[in-house]
Length: 345
Image (cartoon, rainbow, N blue to C red; front, side, top):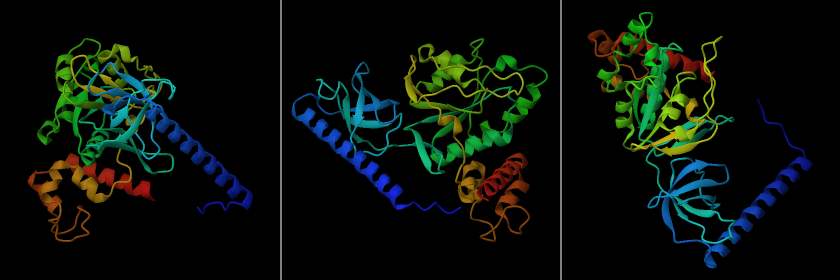
């Protein structure tokens, strides 16, 4: 659809608004420079963004976890997200309204992204070491959904693992299905943890896993992510929604991106954007590489445009016939490829 053409008055109004924004930004920068000159800002130090409020962020000192300040962000800095490491100056006077100043964003080692309302990819959290894909007996989990999360995690370079939550709900009606569903993943390098926040079973193992680095939970609504965070961090008070009795689907309840320190070690980021983590805008090559057991065979097909279905000399199909690739994962790949192609049309 073609863009609507703006008339002269609309163009003038947009230009005027932009000029006013730029003037406010220049004034804010001048005030920050003046505050630094007058000694109202402390020495520069390294910190971490632990919450994001749009134009301002909450920063925690790397050397003193008790030193936390809401901060202005210098105009020349790209967008900051929870988990970012930054160079900042804490406020020591009132010239900045008691707010510190972030002067630079340090390099990221990982990013978690999702599309914004315009379809452009937007980073929602940074410097994550581990993605825990949470599933539960209800809503009923499916292999395609799990693989979608795993592929997305593989493209970020962040270590994924599976967490089967609400194991107190496992009974004779769903046990065999869950065991069959999860059986292939440990051999592919994806550990499976089991947990019940109700009984506490599996909690020690989970805390041990989370004790190093920064983790995030992803998964569909209703699998107990907010209840899980409340169990790990009662002070976090992530709002918990009841699973809809009528639909068997959960309600998204987390509203703000924030980083929490776990009492037993490690950090946890919870963000409304993370729950939408997925495989948008992914090429077929990236999708193929997201299936770890496919990687040794990629690029060895007879034809460069091989679709990995019935073409002669297909290395992926030959691996399938030998048992190096399971039929279930092959079906999953074809399903996700079709869904990406349909979304692109």
